[in-house]
Image (cartoon, one colour):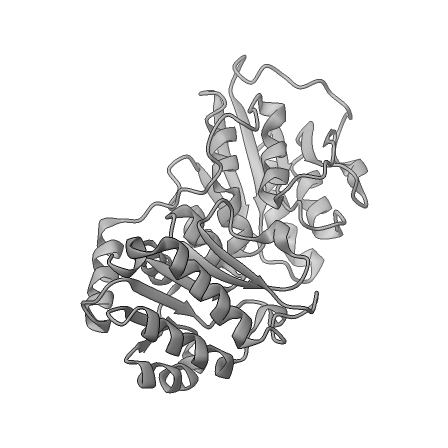
Length: 343
């Protein structure tokens, strides 16, 4: 009723101007791993104008990307509150819309309404999920090694090949943000390597108890005695973070999203549960020690030097023992050797 004809052949994207919309109105980490796929689609033809539907939390990053024409913010709440967004999408007269939410096993009502409200003839998404008939172009589902590769598959209708580029994200880092990060690191201490420890997570199942960080931080100080150690977290985590930082000569800092990304970019080693911060590390090739739930290897930092330590619980990181993280840290330092210790 809203979507028009179905199963239309893929056009020649260079034949005329096309307006393409990419739906990525979810978490910051999900958005970060999709950056290069979105860039590849936008650059597939000079005739493509590329827009993004972003969530309130990832819209600030979307606005920094040079290939994006328009960022439309959509907050997932009561369905009919999205009516103004649907009207805006319809007015923009999109030719194609891509559903980037490949990790979700069902195309839910929110996403379906966004897709259909565009009235775009080409609605592109990953097949094999509930309600995938909403797409007019279905990408076959494959057992790929990393979920980033699933997102890469969405670019195939635009002539983009999986081996055509490095899919690690590129995040613009303005000079003023880099300078601010350097100043913050200087306030922590002049030593190297710079070790960034993130306490904050967006989902409770990825949370690791603060007291578990204490032996890890002690080992960092033992193995890397000259390191500058910065802990970051939300304002409500400041007290716990300061208690962890003081015994090892570290500093607890509360930073904005952009400041955290800049801190990751200028760090030598990141220690963090699986969250958007670990995916930002892949953008800047920052060595990472990532803490994850059991059987979640597909969501590890993409092509990033480091270690991933898994909990025995597929639903929570919390049961992961400190001893296992310390062992992974030792292994990482041993492998990197002087290249990390003397940076």
